[in-house]
Length: 311
Image (cartoon, rainbow, N blue to C red; front, top):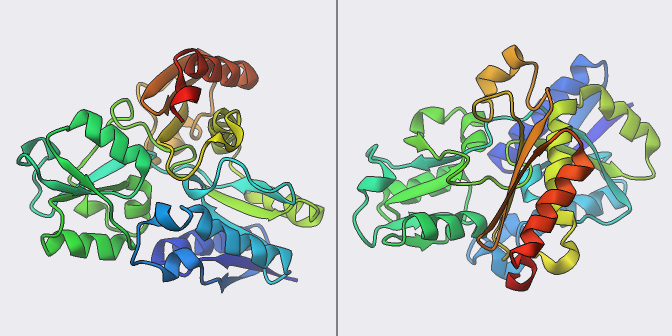
């Protein structure tokens, strides 16, 4: 049996699918990639939020699962809606890469050196909200396209600098183009940032069991805690909501980077965990051993500070 891995056709999406294929091969399974062209890929002329948000990238891959065109769908977890239809399941998670956001400036200048009114390109409402708070003198503008397209636009002078996920840039072999990294505490990442997720039909128990062979349990723990905080808000969250959640093991002085995971035993391998969350400018923080207790504490802090009313 050859496992069919559904993926978008972007360079980064193909890297993710190929990595899943490689890991499955190491586990003794034949697999192939199947490219699914999504509406989000075709419509590069308008802001993503205006046509349905990143869920557009997910929907057509899920339709391919339902139509038995693919057996698995591979996603960047940060792009997935906090709620997915019950007929689907997130069955496995790859080891988390660097979860931080990265600053790219083609001349190597820091964001602090940007002149007043400089145009900074980013697409996520989460980044836009945090950048506006950190750098109110700068102009934050929407940007679409893959990494190559965005960097080209910056080189052409359309943007003074860019903010992108460090994991994606590194996976594409372009880490040398990163000018600097934002600290986790100043630019809180999206839930699941740096994690590749594998989705399949909930009823396909054979496939769900099969992909567990390549699951990275510490990354799964962090992913499920982060997503559970957002799930508590139900359908009150949409593609315009500036939300962020990040979980890590507190024995590290900072969330480990990809080159430190092997030495430490993997991302979030040791408990207790620290969870930080941001919803519409309201922040929450909790430390503990129990996942459910952490999720409850963070959610209750956010509600107590009025996050629900701000959505």
